[in-house]
Length: 351
Image 1 (cartoon, rainbow, N blue to C red):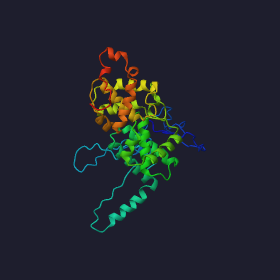
Image 2 (image 1 turned 90 degrees about the horizontal axis):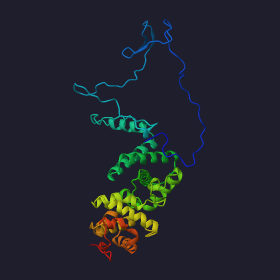
Image 3 (image 1 turned 30 degrees about the vertical axis):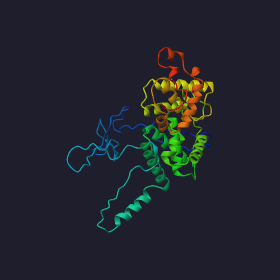
């Protein structure tokens, strides 16, 4: 993942380019005694000297050892391959990444508490502390939601960019983090619904929608994870077929159910069946329709629990699909013996 310039603004602000200074790479170091155009310069880190390897003339002293630090910091004897610090985090570029810990053991004098307060005030500014706290909250919520580290990093990138541009000033921290996680899920093609994000973060749907719209307009984000798919849903919303993988896994359905259910949803969208319904409702009704069609019994209550919609909503979508069952079910499925229209119940009650 590239961290150079994540989430550029839709209308970038023109900034004056400051002149940069660097070492002159055209200058060559040669020995004044040998004057060899191809000098043999040796860096002796043990003594800190820069020596000509041909005549032994010392060309410089107190050079800095840029190699890795492999000293032993263990209390007991033996090899300790630990380094002097953790790897640098690209998300914390420009911030101090080394911590100082002060012991509580001060003999009851209270000096340690005062030192800790002074260290905390001088260690980082308020904005940096808020950024670190937001990163910890994003990591915690992503762990609770069983989201991979990729989504966690995207959410952190998005939050840092919004904090740098001051896009959501005055909005609650939880709402901003929830919007970043929601967008990160869509960018990684593992979308979550507003209801799932709201249940996880306890943020109201209205505030979450406001933060999402502000970030989407500022960074010109792709409105929906299915934008880059070959069979795309209408842009602006998450397609119902994007939710099938998770729902089918939770329902412990066979692998052949998901592709058939996906074809049914795409065909129904082309015919305009169940237009205007939410993707969650369509996914729940399509799964029940497919389970009955393939004789993989699942009750409406089970599907309702997994999808998070009411049983009446699933029944309504099923009725719409049942009315056009001849158009939705392919002839090859019936010829192969996978599907039978007779298995579909006339009433949408659970088996």
